[in-house]
Length: 238
Image 1: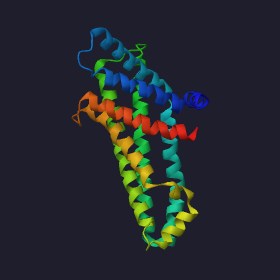
Image 2: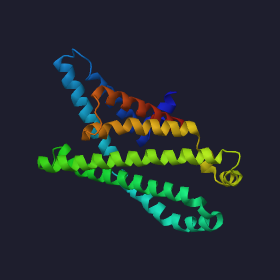
Image 3: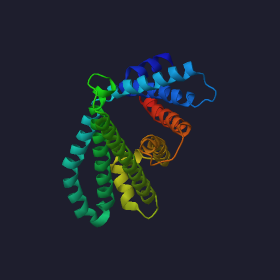
Image 4: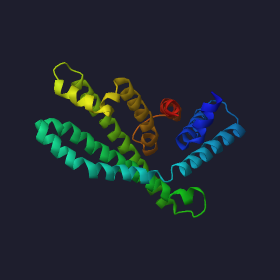
């Protein structure tokens, strides 16, 4: 157990999830009624510093996101044309899923990049004008919100594809799934967990932008839930 925990916290995703869990607990602690001023100040500082530390850990995440976009743009046209010749209109679902994936990772990349532009301001190294910093954070959270929406739509498409491929009449899809191990690895339960994580994470930018009316208690519960579910998936792979 301790060796597994040591491996988990030595990886960047594992460390980031650990810090996120502590940060979400701080968010919940700040909602406790009759909390004294000293405790409020300490929990507030801890939440801010943990959030800042996590931003350093994901500073270069935009590179991976844009790399995925370029990979999807570079590899899909040939496979799309081949599938369309072989299966007629059977590739439309894959094409829509690919477009959603490209949109999702593009929005994630823009979110991380815009968030990085405010890091010098957050560390007080080079403060930006208040309006600039607020505008950058607002636009970054918009891209985060859009990325999570595209991720939910992608999960919906995956669920539809899984439903059609599991029907008795879709023998051709079943043969295709046998040749594609990625398709076989997708299960309704894994899709449910992904939707749960994305929905809980959607509360953070949604409340920041004022698009989702919810108190910080609900946001904190959502953070804890999404962190535990996604962190458990990382724990299993280490």
